[in-house]
Length: 188
Image (cartoon, rainbow, N blue to C red):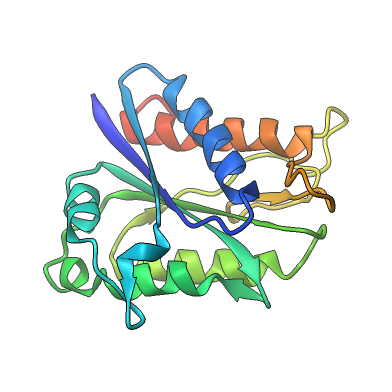
């Protein structure tokens, strides 16, 4: 079994729903051991992420999928605090050659999600990781990749009190998770 960790922050709950879809897809691949890890705001003290156990667990993973909502054209501050805390893993090159991927959610079709995915990819590249994109043609008739992304996973949340994700985006998330797991396990 190869561990695939999905580390994410969610503000309203919609990013968590997308993370769960990515996890379902990854778990559908034989040999994948999927772990969902939510970034807890309580682990951020004076602006610094302090949960070393989470980072130690990520050090032991074969693949890491990053997830964050897009706020004001970038990742959430809570995710950035986590990313900054990975410097010891970077310095020791503990994530070098691991599979990496990322996803983001916002309330509009664009919402500047691309800049968030570019940040997540840059984080992975700094760690020496191998980035996996969506691999899906855009705007398929069945709604897969309706937002037209190649860099990673994207979803749009519904503008109401439910914090739902469009059904097509959830299915796209499942396919994205399956693709990352297939590369991790070697079934690509």
